[in-house]
Amino acid sequence: MVAGASILPFGCSNPAVLDTLDPEYYPPSLTGLRGSHPGSNTHAHSRAWDGKSDWGPTTELKEEYDLIVVGGGISGLSAAYFYQQKHDKDKKILILDNHDDFGGHAKRNEHTIDGQLRLGHGGSQTIVEPQYASEVVNGLFKDVGIDIDRFKTAYDHDFFKRNKLRAVTYFNKNEFGEDKVVHHPFCNYPNYIQGIIMKGKLSNEEAAQLAPLGENGKEQLLRVLNGGYHKIDVPEDELREYVRSNSYFDYLKNTLGVDDPGVLRMARYSGLDWSSRGTDLMSIGGAKSVGALGFVHKDVYDEDNPYIHHFPDGNATIARSIVNKMIPNVAEGNKAEELVLSKFKYDELDKSSNAVRIRLNSTVVNVKHGGDPKDSSEVFVNYINDGKSYQVKGKNVVMACYNMMIPHIVSDLPEEQYAALRLQNKSPLQYTTVGLRNWKAFKETEIGMAMSPGNMHQALFMDFPVSIGGYEYTKSLDDPCVLQMIHCPYGETIGAPALDQFKEARYKMLSMQFKSYEEEIRGHLIGMLPSELFDFDKDVESITVNRWAHGYSVSGGGDSVKVGRQPFGRITIANCDSAPGADAKTAINMASRAVNEL
Image 1 (cartoon, rainbow, N blue to C red):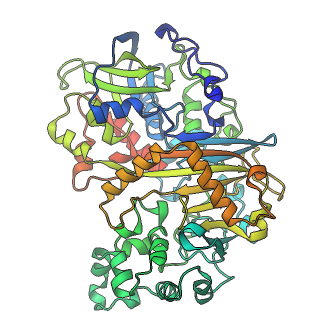
Image 2: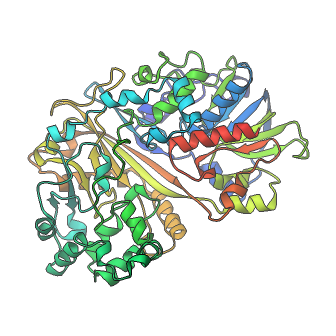
Image 3: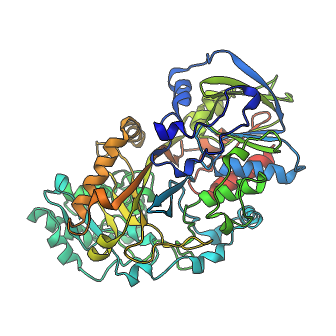
């Protein structure tokens, strides 16, 4: 509470001085509950869940903009940038976001450990397969100073092999009867970490025997590991359709005869965030595509697209680079690489002298044309900041927030578009970063990534080894480092409909306090690492839990996406949901489309 009070966003509640941000305001350094942090969704939930429309007296600010962008993630920031490029640089743009930081899922986590800065990402992780980027994406990268080729040398390809860090599986006592590390990943998920040691220490037979399962479970696990399409008894010309239309869990149970709860649990969590759901809801082909249990293949990404295009803070550097291009004096440096260690001046974001302004902690609750949408010349946007209602006016609006919120806040949408947008959804995700004083325990136990099917965080790993822009990834065992932990929450009932599982998991995620997350992380690390090598209270400096109750985009199916993203008067829609997709390239492409539609 004391830390929060020290970075209150505004020095004064008077709307005439909304641009007087506290110079000490710096959200990247905050730890604890982050991502969709407490309070960030309060007003949105009141609007969507309770239909709240009375926000008290509304102050009509004397602010008029050429463009208002609702949502300050990569898509919203890109939309503002593209609009500015297509028009005079002095066009006035306002970006509103309900979070206390810009970037959306592209959040920067800073950990200061024994005086040393260590960076991590809080959501949007890596530029995936940049070779397939569009001209629009490549053009923006060039404009803001992102050099894709730089990662060839910035990423330490030999770090994991040099330190003999492997992909392992950690079985915890609570779910499997004992705390045990087996040097076998049992799936292909760790393969996206370039250079990690996937195999070489244990065969399938040896690993299955070491797994803390009953004899029947061990035999079933080996059966799955040695399974594959050749076990499916259908004619070859029918196989493609069969694996596309039949359930992976039915394949495990009926084709391979698996009923052991421990093996099924391992299987369910073996895909994680390569998909928006557990493997209990995947087809056989879908499970194979994510390298689920029993479908380990050599490479997930092709050789021309190694998974190395990762800034130390993930795609937060993309967001920061766009902001730096639009807002003067916000940071020192021009190219993305020069911004990695730059401390942004948040008090520069919302200055009235700027052509582009970013207003944080501002939840939009109503967007309405000034007249008939077909010929209206203005749009009024109402938002809540610090519990107070404000209104601004714009000539154009880009909705770059979640699709699922748009029907609740854009007035008078056509019925078909309203219904289509209501079909959109998102799966919950959680990325936790842990600041460690050293990584001796990981070195000695040869753990680079641990699949953990019995824990909340189903995977944890030492962060991507990237040194760039003066930032140095951890070198010696005594150096501090950041541990990444991934949680893809599913519902308790295996096979339940995806949306029901998402709703259940989302509710649980948002109802938990930080203390519960910390206890889970404590138990996870203590159970996995030897006590003579690891002391939680001494070795863990900080924890940042990035909760995204609304994470990966989930399409409503059919034509709902295309119908939902149609322009509406002077309002267009830009976000990953409108693709649908869930990566930075998609966010940028959708921003370009939305601006072109204006």
